[in-house]
Length: 150
Image (cartoon, rainbow, N blue to C red; front, side):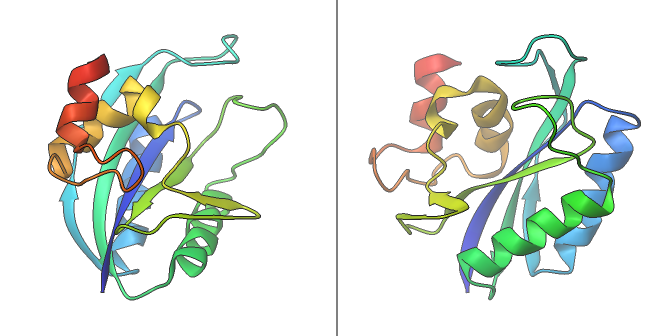
């Protein structure tokens, strides 16, 4: 069993409803060990869109990282996720941030997430559910990473 750390975000429609839906669907993929509070944040990159509601979730799962990523994409699709504009509006965004201490880079999946340590909207919620998780490349805890930018 591995611990997966997942970021959740939404800025279209019923943002909180989309995030709650994702949490319930993720419960079917393993054992949810933590869910953060929701954080309202400004968009990054493409700025012509509404505010995001972001959160984080810790999941113990038997799924491998690529299988889990496929499941996350499926949950996004269930909520009508469309990928029309890079960093654009989305009903639901689920990012696999870390999968234990796994480091990998294959088409469609890079672990750990290559920009997680730069993003307050990721680290703020993540520090609530996995403050002592260690970034396998940087060797710093989530708490330390948050302290650098938070």
